[in-house]
Image (cartoon, rainbow, N blue to C red; front, side, top):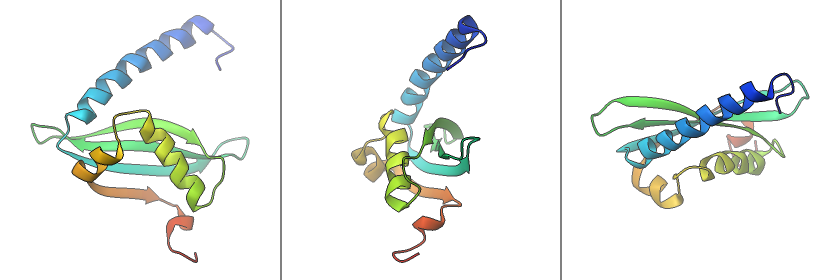
Length: 118
């Protein structure tokens, strides 16, 4: 992954691991959730999805978290859905949590998710 400075890369990955653990606790304790995803192409022309979780905490404050950046295996509706599920599966956002707390989804720029035939 990092070829320039392995020590720096390990340091950044350690910080991210600690932050992800804290984020999981925040999400687990959230009152409401919103799942967002936005796509782009990387330099190798691979479709990427950035998966965000926005939540309302117990004090009523809204907080966003960039959770993950997923490379999609396929850029059709099922592939986009699988990528978003892959990002969410790494945290405590299970189907049960979504049924209880999910109030909104926003998948910006995903034309393949517009309808059955489009």
